[in-house]
Image (cartoon, rainbow over all chains, first blue to last red; front, side, top):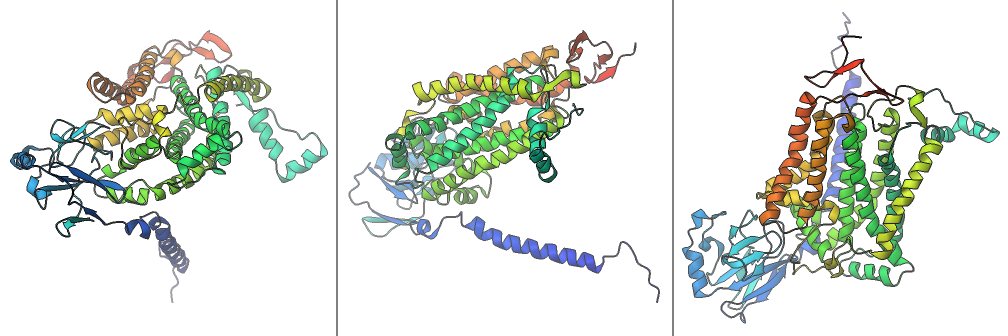
Length: 173
Length: 423
């Protein structure tokens, strides 16, 4: 039996090194996940992820601000003129093209998260150049469909998941 | 550097100790007899001032943490409790809050000194990079500390800054949620910021030790930028620089005291004395003064992602400084053209600080854009071009010899120092 040792041939010692390293790395990665995941929203935060609001008392042109996941949600009962303006806008030319119909379930009600998509400030209602909202922080203008029209915000105001439970109750989240 | 000198233990105990743990030797070599260029000016005292600033922040911070409650319902009240009820709480908090401003003031002077005298150049690249790491950690720590007060500026500053993360394509939103521990800035955010605000100063302390270690390997730069040649160029750190540093520190403390005792809130924002309200945004959100230049860069760009990239880029570019400015002559004293660009840069940075506090419209927005472009052009265009084309003025032979050095010429093509042909 010829016993020539090839120096490039992996040895049993190499195998042990690699096994040890893989074993250690797997263990470290497994332990790292709980340490990272604990940073994510906990059960008590996630539990607050839906909220119901009574909208029966909102007059036409009026609005309600409710807190959902620590952020304000604007519920606005739009007037007939406002609906017309929102629908007649040529959506294709907007910075973030979306038709009004894609943003509402019932065109009388506009429901949007009241957080500016730029850097998270709360826009002020009935201000700005487009009859909707205006963000005082960095000057973003939104129209009556919550669409960005002017300013640094990249996208339209977010539409949260919601449903009308009955005539007077809306459930957000 | 001077290696002629060696520490000799003076008595039985220090001899015994030196064989087991050479603590005294270490202290002597690094703090007492450490050979330091003899021509350092007062701009070189800021390293010492900064070290003591960090110590001040850590001591006052530990004390404040004994009275502060990191909970959204109690945080703001516990700050008022510190201000009104805790014995000397007002003093300790004002030292801590204004101390952060003083810390940044000192670090800006320290960095601009480095930029002027070319202290980041070979062989001090690592020293400089560690400094930038410290600066970055300081910004993160200061930002988190400001949130702990839980006033309106704290809350909305935190909202705006954390939202920068959401601009990262695809994973941005998930990272933001991970960072906040919820869907908006809330109790989990406050809790983890408190934890990290307590931790990071010790991390800074660790990097400071590396920074000083790196300094003691290469030795100090000096106002001429000419390397130390022999022991004639140096003096021992103690007593010459211990006394100079202490004197500078006392003058610095006098100014610091003015803020603490006579104008403790001038550097803050009145809105932060209103408790955080997640449903109302203040009309005008501004960060603390020391972050205003970066905020101005962020807002100078109409595109959200680009604004964020440029703001981070404005710090990231500092890491590459030693390789952007390859001119062998270190000190701006002998660089007439660089000097002009340098002072323009200094003014442009101050202007950015002013603009960061103004509404981003009209002339302010325009000037922010001009200054932002100049900020990057200074590092990415001016520095490499000057390294290649600037002709330095005549230099002395050495720190101790003011005679003009004729033995070297500056290579006009790339600024290299080359032996003169006539020697």
